[in-house]
Image (cartoon, rainbow over all chains, first blue to last red; front, top):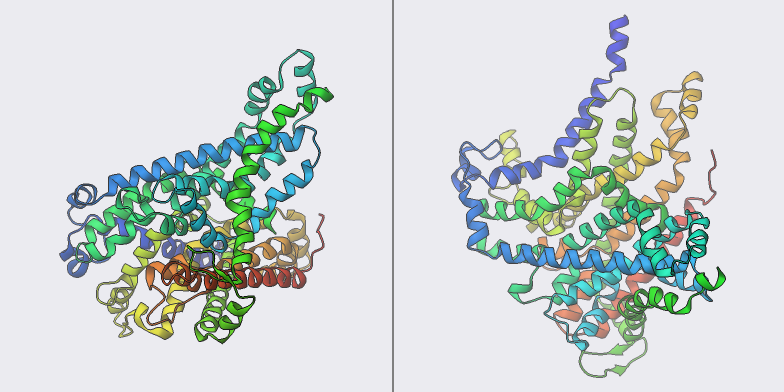
Length: 280
Length: 293
C-alpha cells in the first residue's frame, strides 16, 4: 500500500503528459535541425523523423554561400544593435528626468509616453510608410532602426522609471554636496545602479528587433538591405526542392535568439513577461 | 539641490530626444491613421475628404466581414489553446514532485524567441501535403487522414491559428507559472486539510486568485489574434482565395497592393476600436479588485 502511495505521489500520468507537450513544443525545431543536415532522399523517403545518418554540412555551406544569408545576417545584427543602443540610451535619459528631476508636466509627459504600449504596430503601418518616404529613409536600414527605437521607447522608459523610483534620494544629495554636476551624477552614480534593468532591456529590445517582421516587410524591398525575417521569406520559391539548405538557413537565423535564451533564460522570461504586469 | 534637480538644460537634453522621436514616429502616425480614414487617398496626392464613406464601403464589403470573422476565430483558437494548455502545464510544473522542471520550462518557452518567419516556414513544411511532418506522422501511424492542410479553405484558418497557438503557448505558460508561484502555499495547505482534490483546489482557489494574470492573458491573446498578420502573409497570402483574410491583412492589401491608403486606414481604425472594445469587455467581465494576500 505504501509503494502505491509513493507511486501516486510521483504522479506518472501528469509527468508523462507534461513531457509529451514538451516534445510537441520542441520536436518541430529538432526536426528542422535534423533535416538541415540531411539530403532530400533521407528527408522525404528513408528517414523523415529521426537523427541524420550522415551529416550533410554542405547544406550550411549552400545556405551561406549561394544565397544572401551572410548579408541578411549582418543587416539583422546592425539593425538590432543600433535599435538596442538607441532605445536603451534614449529611454534611460528620459526615465531619469521623469523619475528624479523636477519640471512642469513631468507626469503628463510620462503618461503620454505610456500610450505607446497600447498601440499595435499594424495600426500605424500606413502613416509610418508615408512618413519614412517623406524623410527619404525608404530602402535604407534607418527606416527600420528609427521605428524600432521609437516602438520600444514606451516599454523601456516605463521599466527604467520604475527602477529609478526605488533608488534613495540621498545618493544624489550627497553627489550634489560634493559638487558633482548632474551629468556626472547620472553617468557615474545612477547608471551603474540600474545595470540589471539595462541588461534586461537590452535582451528585450534585441529579441524584438531581431524577430520583427511587418515593418521590415513594408520598408525594405532591396535585396541587400533585408534582415533575416524578411530575407528568409523568399527562400520558399527558390528552395522548394532543397529542403536541406532551407533548414540550414532557418537554423542559422534562429541560433542567436535561442542562444540568448538558453544562456539568460531567467532574464529573457522576466524581460518578456514584465510587459504583463503593466499592460493589464 | 533644487537647482541641481531642476537644471533646465539637462532636463531638455534628457527628455527631448525620446519625446521627439516618439511623437513623430509613434504618436503622430496614430492621429494620421484616424484622420486619413476619412479620405480617398492613394498615399501620394493630397487626397479628398469623403467623411465616413470609407466606413460605409467597408460595412458593405463581404471581405471586411470575412476578415472580422477570421480575426475572431483566430483570437478564439489561440486564447482557448494558449490559456487552457498554459494553465494545465503551469499547475503541473508548479507541483512539488516534478522532475526536470528546468528542462520543461525551457522546452515550452523556446518557440517564443523564434522569428515568426522561421516558425511559419517550418510549419509550411510540417503541413506540406506530400512530405510534411504531419502527414508523414499519420502515414506512420497507419491513418489515412492525410490532407493538404493549408489549401483547404475551411481548414486553413484553423491550421494557421494553430501555428500561433503553438508558438506563443510558452509565453502564457511563463505568465501563468509566475502567477501560480506568487500564491502563498498556505492557501493550498488549507485546501488539502479540508480534503479538497487537486482539481477542486485549483478551480476554487488558484484560478480566482490569479484573476489579474488571467485578465492580462486574455487581453493579450485576443488582441494579438485580432491583429494577426504575419502568419497569414507568410503561410497563405490570405488564401486559398480570400479564406484567411484578417483586418490587418485587408489593411495591408488595400494600402500596399492596390494603393487605397484611405480605405486601409479605415480598416486600421476599425481594428483599434475592436481591440479597445475587447479590452473594455474583458476588464468588465474579469472584475478588477486587487487581491491582497
